[in-house]
Length: 223
Image 1 (cartoon, helix red, strand yellow):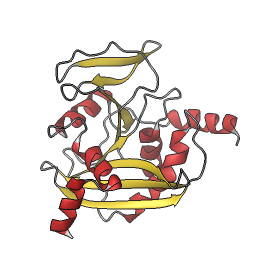
Image 2 (cartoon, rainbow, N blue to C red; image 1 turned 90 degrees about the vertical axis):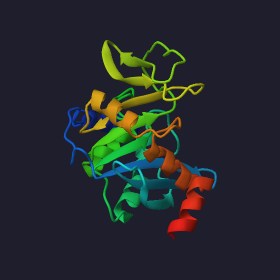
Image 3 (cartoon, rainbow, N blue to C red; image 1 turned 30 degrees about the horizontal axis):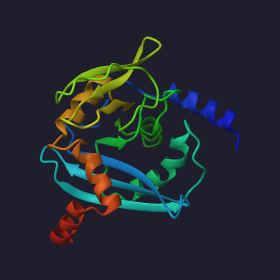
Image 4 (cartoon, rainbow, N blue to C red; image 1 turned 120 degrees about the vertical axis):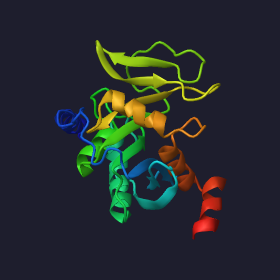
């Protein structure tokens, strides 16, 4: 695998990322969530996409795509591994979100092209990266108080926000994906909270992907 070519592609794509607010609709009618995982010892990539109504945050639609994994796990190049399945799930949606929260990094990536940026560029959709762990950059750990906030920086550039969404939980790493500014990314994640560590779009995407009890109850009622 030609990592030098992939690195060059990342750098070229990163220059195309729009870090200003260019939402499809503001406020959005539909807010989406994306989660990617792997099955069959990594041989299958599974992408789950959900569409929630705004402002109720009610789950309206979900789609799951499973495709053969296109490349091995290589740190820093995860978006090349995840975006094909996300695109497959995206094509199945009858409602396309006006804004998509992705379980993963956006600009908070060594080459400023996490999966939220990469997918946002591929489908030209406003995206926000909502990651559970730091990939790069430095920060001061926010206080334990819910809502505590700190900037994530690298070489005097702010890459994202480190935000304590809930007491006694590790903070989230929030960053611009595409067509959303850094402050707006934080604001929309905050607006999509409903008492859990994760915002509702990515929480529901994970619930669908993992067939968690909340999703199974939803299926019983709606399907």
